[in-house]
Length: 125
Image (cartoon, rainbow, N blue to C red; front, top):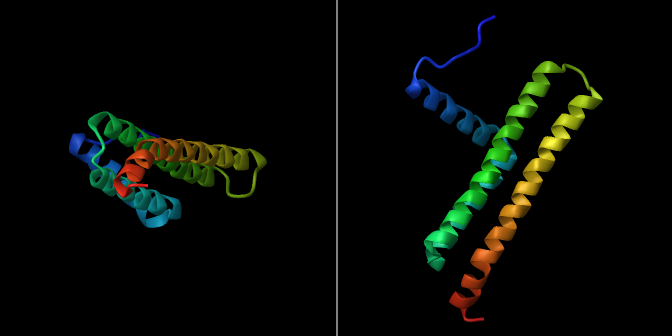
């Protein structure tokens, strides 16, 4: 069996965006992450965060997206490999889901630390 390869760079990007679109269409948590990403971007523009702060926000959002997309990939691969329940399959899925939770909590903390003071200042509290 030959490995599946993309014939060129354009096909590679097409495949990547196809994977992103699949996750957005089928995974509730990816849809939640999309909403959160859009809200953070809007808040960042509204609050006028600086370049360094944008870098941290972008890294945090990217970390969550990488965790979520790799979670979808792991779940799909485990489902393909195991047609019935297996305790090791459950561990693989649960641990990967924990990675997403840790990434999301970290991103929330970064967001609160960056956007919180700016929001308090903007609202005059």
